Figure 1: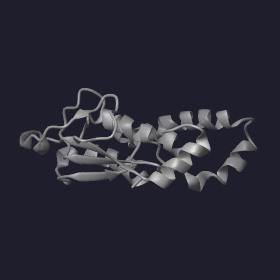
Figure 2: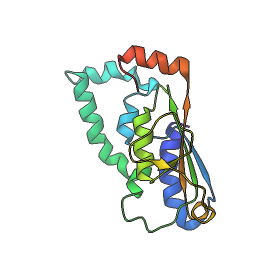
Figure 3: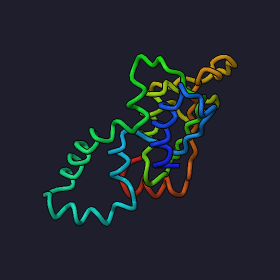
Length: 166
């Protein structure tokens, strides 16, 4: 989950032609990595060290954006640029509303890169994702399905801390 899902997306996209993986579940993945890195709870202690060298937290975001260029080669979205000619296995992408590390927007961006579809009976529409229709042939050729989980307490806490809803 989380970082494993983010790096796992790149691994699944790369290993598709080898057929080493016949299906994958990516829990709370996201892209770009710099967006998720800024929210990692483990890095909050590093803020003080980084802020000794820069003037404002916006500068930290700029540094992460530059760092992103070196991380692009390991992300799933880097391998999904059109046209995708190599096959990849069926994938289930699981997003978590209320996750403290990976914002839903990062998972949605990865889902759009995979041209994922959503399951029916969803709570909200997401730009660029359509409702899925089960197609046995498409599943064998790498259908990607996007789902969301809502952690009510955590989602409410994050929303009130940041003053906005995700």
